[in-house]
Length: 145
Image 1 (cartoon, rainbow, N blue to C red):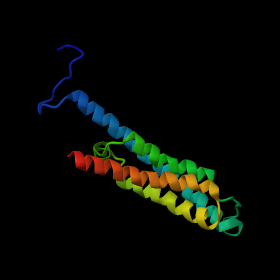
Image 2 (cartoon, rainbow, N blue to C red):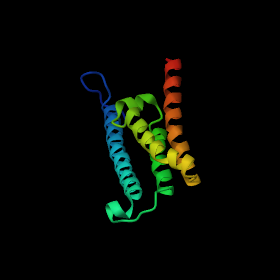
Image 3 (tube, rainbow, N blue to C red):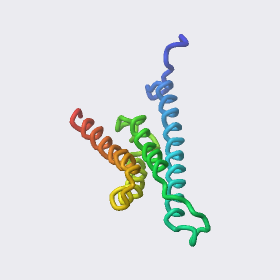
Image 4 (tube, rainbow, N blue to C red):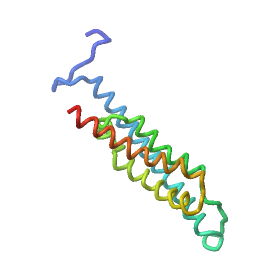
């Protein structure tokens, strides 16, 4: 068999397609753990900064630009897995992206609105962009059938 042609398994599927699916699955798994690590770091920083020195023994300023960067990570994951089929097959599902974006929206919106921290508005926009992007891609997939 020529080296450039795909090999077929007993079910008629291409083994090269399966390898591509496995590679995509592994990438999605690493991405999910990366998103989780960023979310845990931001949540701990946020809780320590709210507790103050009396509670934790550490004085930290509330995160502003780091929350913006952290809120960008689910949007980058959505851009990487733009097709709804890719998100459905991989480990990084739409619910993961919605949970992480919701966390950053929950952390940034009250401080941006009530505390006047303008630096957090990009985090609000990135988080909302994930929800709009998921809605748009799912809507486009449904209308195209």
